[in-house]
Amino acid sequence: ILFRGKRVDSSEWFEGSYWLSRSAVRETTYITDGYGNLFCVIPETVGQYTGLNDKNNVKIFEGDILKFRSGIYSVEWDNEHSKFLQRDGQFSRELHIWIAKSEIVGNIHDNPELLGGD
Image (cartoon, rainbow, N blue to C red):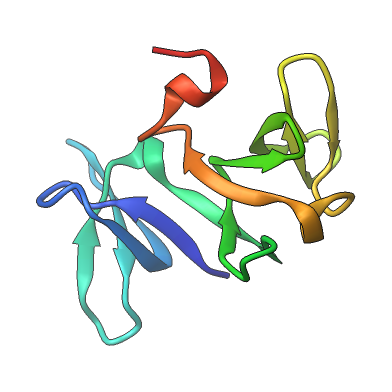
């Protein structure tokens, strides 16, 4: 399973395996590159790869913002139904419905204004 997170030390996005370190004092979130290297990431930015790519063959992760025609959608995980959804504030749909014609235009962490946020 592939994850993405924003590195604490450089604010760059990094992809790899998710790893969580817990102690009595603190909890630290890492993404590992598979070669034993751990990169500390901001926990709120971690998102799982959906297994799908947009129309430009770019990997779609949880937290990405997609554009389809004139609509803008965020990619979210739905725990209740165990599936990824694309949500536009009013409606939510299964992610795969328009994926072949959708395009990633940003993500909820770097571009919240695309969804009408701060």
